Image (cartoon, rainbow, N blue to C red; front, side, top):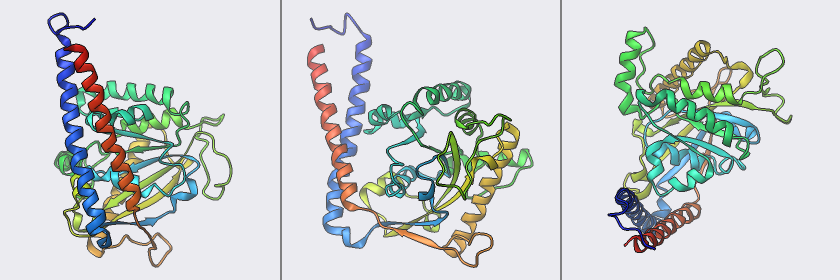
Length: 341
């Protein structure tokens, strides 16, 4: 028996939200699939976007548990990381993402929910509650789903939105003045480490040793400090990834691996450690914007980069599945619409 809006007025709001979500998905996928087909056919030889990797080789720890701490400049950062990690074994399949809750309403939102990712709501009024939800989410989903890596953007927002606030906070609290990154927030990192780091009998972290990568790890073993750099400090957003309307460019990603045993777990010490990592990111990015390359590691005369070329066929297939997801939602919504009306 069909239910009418008069009998259940709350159904109207659900229908409106579903229609808005559907319209967004259809618009996104129609633009994405058609524009990318044109790109593959017409512009593929130009190689609009390539990757260059610097620093430590993270393939060495791809089978261990790790947290990626990444600077955040634009929506395209997620795409950049997804591409960089495609050739890192099963990392992408076994990864948990911490994303802004708005992504729940995109075409990949339901996939991320099923995958076990965590959508975090920003703002002071939600902060304490979100951290409790994150802790519970990790307890219920991380190891039960055989997750290995977590991607976290500690700045809590895009650089352009947080820079002014971060600089004011730094001035007030006698902290470094940063331009290319912002001061990280501690809460989510603290929750992740306290929940996932295995402890020895004396309470110290049972972390990994870079010289013993072959040994089986227990608990979180590594923190991978990841720095994304765009030429001329012009970040790439999702629209640019989809439409390819910018000139050919190379995105640069720098990795530095820290054994968890070298990371302090007490809140104040962890805050100082995180601040130091972002001060180093500031120095890395300053050098990159001045020279076009990251500086060499200590004890080395020159930095070595590794080129990574993206697979056009892989991206095309992903966009095809995204288009099919829009069609699937159309049929689901159409079915419920006919049931209601």
